Length: 273
Length: 256
Image (cartoon, each protein chain N blue to C red):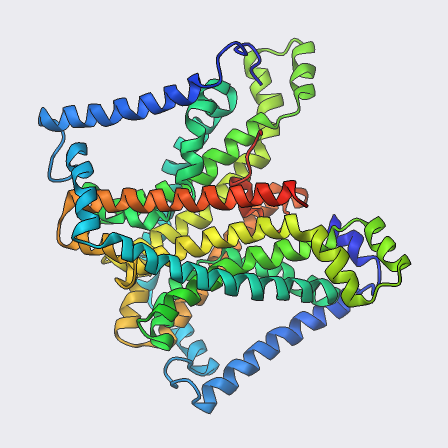
């Protein structure tokens, strides 16, 4: 929106120029990396050559057990999204509908939202043990906050005209939900899930690096303790690619209009003053 | 949405919320005393309260707080300087902005903090590692919000500046920057909160530094009441950070 308006003024970059610049930037970063790697400026093992990283990537992707660990992490993140998202949507709807509940409890959520959730991990270990359950708990708590706040403020932001249109057509309860509320809530719910996915992934993985015996976080720490830096980079590349892909996918579901760059702040903006 | 209950006095809902929280804590105490909940997993709320003075006297939690605060301040000054400078640069170079803006947003959504073992290797188990991770976590929102703020400056304001024959630098200092400041501050606030989250998180993970480490320490000593009390302390600190930045932002908005 703003971006397009802005680009049209001054130097109008045609798509080809933009693509070339992107390619050039990637090449520049790769070249700089390779120079640092070969120069031995930093320890060679810390910044391995790109070739070594690509080889490690091939090895990692060809190792069957890698997919097992990937599945463990993916399962944990999915379970934590279902759990945190379920509670988040239910409580968010309650807070959005009731002014009283919102005034009574929502400020607690705003206060707890920016707390680093990883500090709760010792408690989760005591409650759920050292297995996947404590990681799921970690991810669920992380995902809960952006989802609940996004849903609550989204429900409040529904244009009252839409609701009145539904009423004037004499829509029944179920019709109101299906035709008015759900379509209007699609963007805030998906936005919340998108933010929730990001923090759930971080929460789960950090918990895995702290204490676990399975999952990508465990593999990364394992590679670190063996000082196998190329493998560590390779796994981080796979992970970042997957994270960005899921993020983009959710972004496309939301639609281009709602894709304002750092929508992370959506969970911190107050829905109503 | 609900304008039925306008007659409720404004103090009642927050008070009700507080009462519910107190009631839940009292219920936990009751269930623990009755033996329904396991006291080796959940400490008595009264024990947690009693542990707070101990944190100050024996664990020197105030010094820990100052350590974390110092890391946050260094990270934050760096975030503000580098982030605003990069944002202004991207605003000037529209083509570069078009090429990298979405990558910065994607970068912000990737779990960068997971790279902490790497930073450990490069920078050692030291304060600078913690600060640098905080810096990287805090940068993206500041860059993106600075570009957004500068780009959405009203045309009229820029035209006024042009009509006064301001130089590029003057135009930036007198018109663009002040106009973008409220938006930039939204980014700074997010950046500060992201930096705080990652700093405490990394302290906890690598068992080094301020508030994050103390939780790890207490948990490893199996001091359950102490762990809970220290977590409450960190939650209080985050709330304080949140409230202070929100207050500054509101003050800034009403004075610009």
